[in-house]
Image (cartoon, rainbow, N blue to C red; front, side):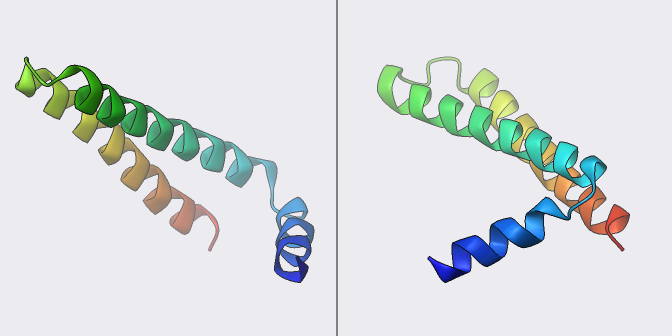
Length: 73
C-alpha cells in the first residue's frame, strides 16, 4: 500500500503532456490486447489482417514509450 501511495503522489507531479502520452500508450496496449483476445476466441482466419492490426498497435505503443523517454529528459 505504501508503494501505491508514493507512486500516485509522484505521478500527480508529472506534466500533462507526459500523462497524455501515457494515456495513448495504454489505449494502444489495450487495443492490442483486445485484438489478441478476439483472435483467440473467434479465430485468425484473415491472419494477415490480425498480424497487421496487432503489430500496428504494439508498434504505436513502443514508439510512444520511446517518445515519452525523450520528452521526459
